[in-house]
Image (cartoon, rainbow over the protein chains, first blue to last red):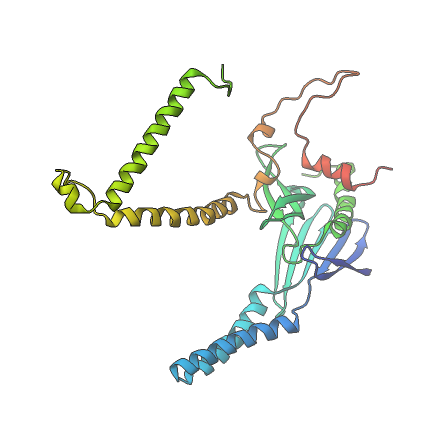
Amino acid sequence: MEERPYRSASGAPIALRRRQHSASCREVAVRCPRLQLRSLSAATSAVWLAAYGLFVLSQNSMVLSAAIFITLIGLIIYLHFVKIDQESLLVIGSLGIQVTSSYASGKESTTFIEMSQVRDVVINEAIHMQKVIYYLCILLQDPGDPQGVSEVVPLFQSSKPRLDCLIEVYKSCQEILEQRKTAPQSS
Amino acid sequence: ENSPAPLPERAIYGFALFLGSWFGFMLYLIWAYVPETWLFSLGLTYWPQKYWAVALPAYLLVVVGIGYILLFGINMMSTAPLNSTHTITDNYAKKQQQKKFQEEAIPALRDIPISEVNRMFFLPEK
């Protein structure tokens, strides 16, 4: 188990941790950049300065208490619903793929995709917000069409690792997925 | 048949447009600047309000400005999201026919599936 530093698409430092549990089970976890103290202070100062300006204009002291409440509740909502701390991928050959996102408040949200639905795990490039980014995605098999792809599940959406990190994750996943072809098909 | 070369018909169209646009511009200047009483004395009474001589150009400029933002927004909305299959394939790629492989010939152009492309790029060949 080793942890290596990489960069996200926007330049923030992220860390990749790979574990091999057994010959057919791999786990890959990407730790997202932490909440920066300076951005938190900047946001809080901006909200409080605006509230103080409103207070000077309206002479209503409720504006200041409301600003404090908004800052606190906004921070809690951000940490619980928006800020992702770690995204991990668990590939178990012949069983499936599990995608976990852990939020900064401790909440974890998990998605499991059965192996028979998984067609392939590929690195795709697409246009995202005036940039072309590489991202890892799971291609789901179309049940009616053996050559078709019914759905694309993008992974690591918050940490957005760069291509060098994605290639490592891709190689780990492909080592497990290749075993599907050599192993006998079980219905 | 469809060449951009100058032709007699195109010269006539161009001259007609040139005269028409000059006439339209002169008409607009007369409507905007000549006082209403002079126009009434000539018998030309059914003109739009002169307010529009200033309002329409102002509206047009705002439309041009909004057009920049609108085009940018339409572009962003038409971009396929990251989870759509349009980033991988489309109707033409799904319906393409496989051509027979001929020895010593350049292979036919076709859309290569993304799994194959990934394996070629990212998995080192032993």
